[in-house]
Length: 215
Image (cartoon, rainbow, N blue to C red):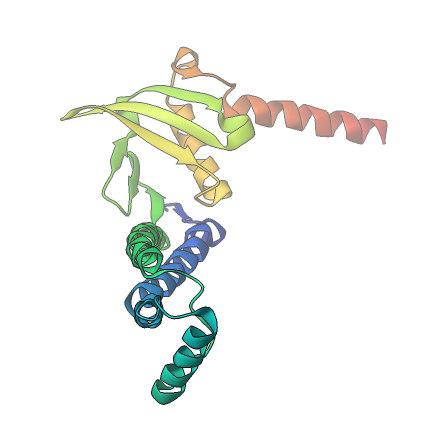
């Protein structure tokens, strides 16, 4: 019977949140660049046509124009050229956040249904990677104890490849079972960076036995 480790929903949500935030910001920047700031630019350009008038006369003239056109009577806070620069900036920010949001969303959509599954000879994945355990040359467990990451280096028809066991992304129990299956066919010298899982199990069993005897 095959064992399957599904992609952790909690991990995929780490990409959904920034995707939503970035796409919302992209829409916000796009609105400002297409509608918000261009409207302010119209006000500023019209206000600057009154630059030759005295301050009091200028304000009176502006009040009359604004009232006639349904504009705010407050004088524009920024100059027309400053607003024009802001419009360009909004386009740039919109493009950046859109790209970031699209990447995060794409990663969320492609990973949320991902899985790793054991086979008769090794394992296979939803993204098409297949590992025959007999072709594994080395298993590096340097980061397994602290990070839950182990790397199996194996050989296939195209050359040397690496498969990453990552129990932060995939369900730990079934993934750990697959790791044990791999280790069972490896020589001790092929497992580097940490002890085999069987050795850990033996230590834990001895510890539990000792505690039972003390009790």
